[in-house]
Image (cartoon, rainbow, N blue to C red; front, side):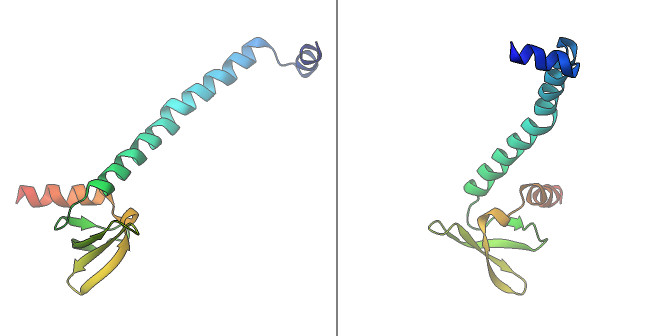
Length: 106
């Protein structure tokens, strides 16, 4: 009863409620869900990366994986300047796949 009075007093009718719910559903399926799927794919990619693979870090550093440390989730990347230790989450799936596509075309 109190909710009914509040909804009537605020001018909040069923069509407005329907529009709000529809907006939230559209927001979820077009914005949030694709982002969640992309994050899951990137995490799976980072977990399945193997030693010797060419990768690109989110910072733009190119290199080859020299070591993978499972305990603290880090990788050692061998670059032209030497070896650098990074978090596994710093490997970019999108940039790495673009690099590997260019290499396969050559």
